[in-house]
Image (cartoon, rainbow over all chains, first blue to last red; front, side):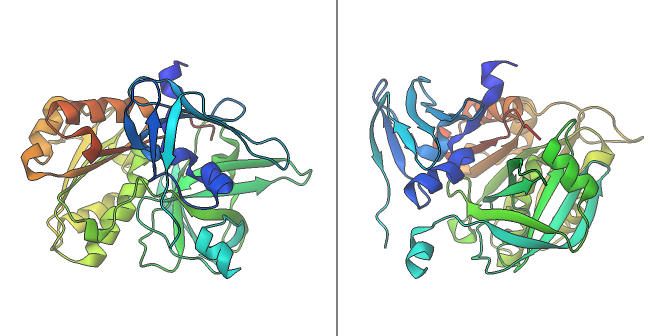
Length: 90
Length: 250
């Protein structure tokens, strides 16, 4: 299977991200450190077939976010993202 | 508990199967009574978890088909070849059985009536499911939302929600439905008979000048080709929301 067929959208990983952030965050925005584009997390490209999930920039495909979940922990890496903006809880 | 609810902690809940509806030979809707269901928005999904007697667990995401106004939650599942979860849900689940699920999940691929229209929905196969929730929601909201649906299926028998779509298209909302049947067509078929392409969208979609919002859902190659075609037709990329199935593990 081609890599591009493995692709889903950021909204497909909303459940995992909600486990981590304890709120819905896919409407929040993330800035790519490589190409500078800013998009909603739900609109970026997600890959879920690895052990863990990988979020890539929809413009340049650089890796924005990696989430792995070993027992009792969440590990987050932000290889090529500059910032994340999520709404404050009311 | 109240704090958890505000923050949106995802809890596994038990749903009881209230009804099973065979939509096509390979697709079944599962209507669930879920205790303390917090309500959902059209386009959201749930995670379903199956646990075997030896403790082995398998988890998949399914789009919600039911309308937010419905207290029961329904998902519509396509049986995939060798799909360990979908085979069970479509083939073995019975009314009265219990199912473990959590949700609603997602906020990006969501449409609410107050977001307005016009609405362009493009579905490939079971990609119709979250879009059906939107259409049902639009109908429940009233006649003020204009919507068009371009829907690609393999054959006439494979069209999910065929009768309901026909009914909605005849209703006051003025929904327009354009079917394309890619593998086989019934005798006398006058609709499209090919993959959704730029020419088809040019003839069926709202013009970009009417500032539509597009929701595209289906297999990854389908979604990407439709989204690219819409951008070529002048739709701003941000007005095209996509949900790719990706490599469905079933």
